[in-house]
Length: 630
Image (cartoon, rainbow, N blue to C red; front, top):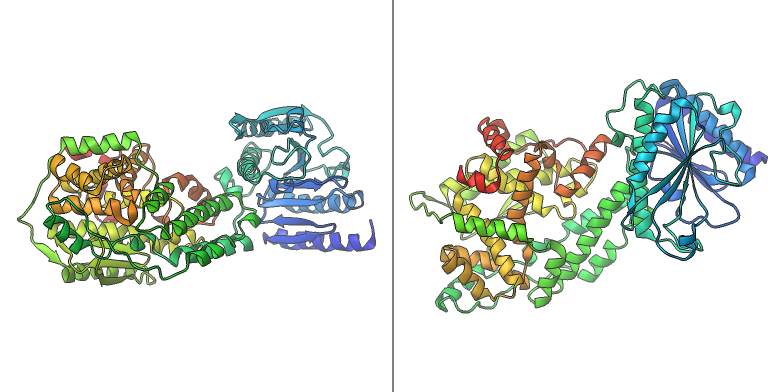
């Protein structure tokens, strides 16, 4: 090894001994174009060395998902320096963990089916030294690898004891002088993430394999530490805590760019007509036969420029597989929304909304029909109406409550014209219709809905390192609306009429998808389902706005899915961490264990009232229809 190469490794080794001993993060370039990342003191290191004589596209990305990795060239001139570096890492970590697990990963020669350019199932060759203390770890790794699924097939795993725990043709790094206090595992991976000639990457396959392999590696290390092979000062609570505890520059830039784009427009406000009230008067004057022309706010931004900014986000450079997946989903959703902005007021908007929000499935449509069939509309004319000014005063009382607990809770309230809803949240603002008139007994439940859920999760998300928690994960609306409607129930203000409205929205969406006209859907709700005329109109208008918007079916879906989540024994508190989707709760839980997400700063105001606990317990035991019956 040349003196320059020696000097390069000497500097890294000195940094490892200094910074790692103090539990400080290390990111260092290595001689030959490699890199070392040690997020903190961890009882493992993933290693990849690329061959010199052939391209090895995609393989090093299999280790860069981890909080402790090293990738380097397979140049024999570097082997001695790499072995010394591994020894330094092992010696430093051994003081804290007793022993350390090294996992070296490489690409196998393509199988026959890969040579024929068929996708093939994931295959792994798991190599170990055959020593007894490592058997339980190998067994755990084997099981975790078999759970990996690609192209509709689970992985095949070959396990073999051997002393050759490295890629063919390379010098071993686990030489006899650094073997004490260290266990090595070799993992050969069938490279189904690229074409048979090794010249073209399949990015979607690689990303899926990276995510799943990262889970398998962390489960293996957790088994390694939990069964006595390593003795950490503080036992690990969960395998997910082994992931990276900091965001890379690419992740931070992507998070910032996506959240900025998300906050630069309000999709629902743009799709809401500005002449809702006059449209109702004209529709009524036509004997409910003809929907008048609807008018929308002009776009105050250029969708093409938004798209240019959106796809400039450097997602492809993000090593963290969980964050990359979250960002990729959000980028895709924002792209669909920006595209839909161009089609507002046309039939094309309907098809764009289907791509974004989907349509109600058969079970949800049946639930809506059951609710409308088994309940009767109730009208309480005895309750006084709260004016827009009274609504604003009551809203500011809620603002003050949350501001005292979180000084940065600086929500605004604005009186507006031309919104189909009485109350509406847009980012950090509560919008109140100038024509608003809410029954006094419905005012507090609706404020818990809008302020205690939508604004609360927005400001909770602002306290997080991850900006997507206030901008909103892809598909966050269903859980947001489920939480908001549940809040109405937990404060004792969810009426039968309110549930019927949510069911009517699903029925209206289903009718629109089946091709019903505006007047036909109005007739379905008003004459056939007994919804009062103006309520039926506003519900129909919400669904047909913009050219057809399927989002309103998410209220009932979100509530139904949330009740199922609670019946399965899950806690409500973690859902207030920001604007997340129920499908991404496991990812948020993982990020909390890794320290990238913190517990929610604020909890809803009703959390201080013991009465909500009894109602919450009912939610864990009863279906939505059973709750209505009680």
